[in-house]
Image (tube, rainbow, N blue to C red):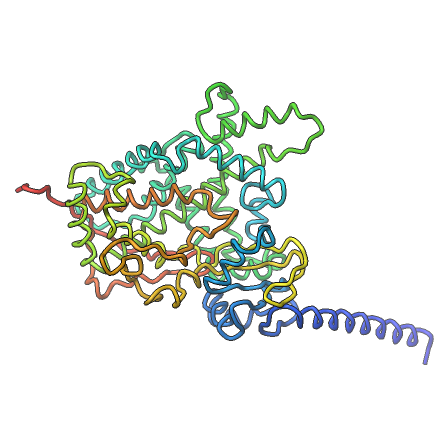
Length: 502
């Protein structure tokens, strides 16, 4: 054997030994983590998941391995948590153990670890505390916020009336209406439904979510490094969102030029004022920067708009699919508020059927079924399993919203899930569309009021009719992964006649 052959043999043996040690370490760590299917190198559990689709695949695996199992998203181990009880432990019963935001390749590329939702530690705490206090100051969760919501609802009514009962696909209009509530609080502005440039920006953002929830978005989540070099629709996600980012940045610059520290107009103004105050603390690292402002506004605007508009859209489809629901709602609306008085949030207490409808629409539409991953802040033991620091933990919100131990018919639309035997509204602790705990949706109170008022005002003024027989109307999501995307069906908005009218 030559000297070269000897060196080659030694090097191969050394490399093989190192690979063997790495593999043994991997097996040791995997044996202590929650159970799950064995992953392939690089691919992880992609083959098991892609055959069924990401969302049903994760649910299928959890049924095989239990409510706490491990799935490899590419090379990343992810602890998947299913069922209300286990999810509750992650959100509220484990302190700050699962408080960190987990790794999300799409969000990391888009937000670059900036902003309210995708930071951790003291940066996140300061941004969260500031945002909660500021939003409350502008009416979040208060009666004063009803007026701008009702104003927007009236704009929707006038827009639907202008259609003269012609079939109409409302998705972009609903996105604009939802965006205006947040635009008012965050940026102090409102966009008209006839603003073509703005409607194009919103449509592009919606298209980005469509791709993100498709197989292309899932491939990017599994293999971000590889997919960033490969052609495909996934490359358009960030391009489609650029116009909205630019609009947010344009608004921030305008606020900088017109800022009056004595009279803050909206969230951006308050953030800029705080930035000026922090400038006086020389040498102290602060999260109050333009990049964090832009990311926070973009994050709240994008997530809040998409989730609320999608829920309202699914609600319209459900009401067309089940027209008998509308008859019961008309009766309650006419008895409690009539056909001319504006509804108010306080009316929810006297409108159990409408309140139950809104909750069941949220539960059934399940807009963000997988929620957003958390991460462990240290090595922990959870349910007897070892979970290393920094491991992604994915609480599957859909499995709480469809937990058969809390909902009688979890896979069906059933308004009785939120009504007791006397027809009164019934709370359900497994109702977690906003997540829970310290990282729960910051705009939960806003969304609750907005959904109630939007549905009540529209049903006070219109009957929603399908262009096809309701029995033939398919309201299944067109995509179901990161987001459940409602199908694009046309709706006829038929004006209701006033009582005593001709």
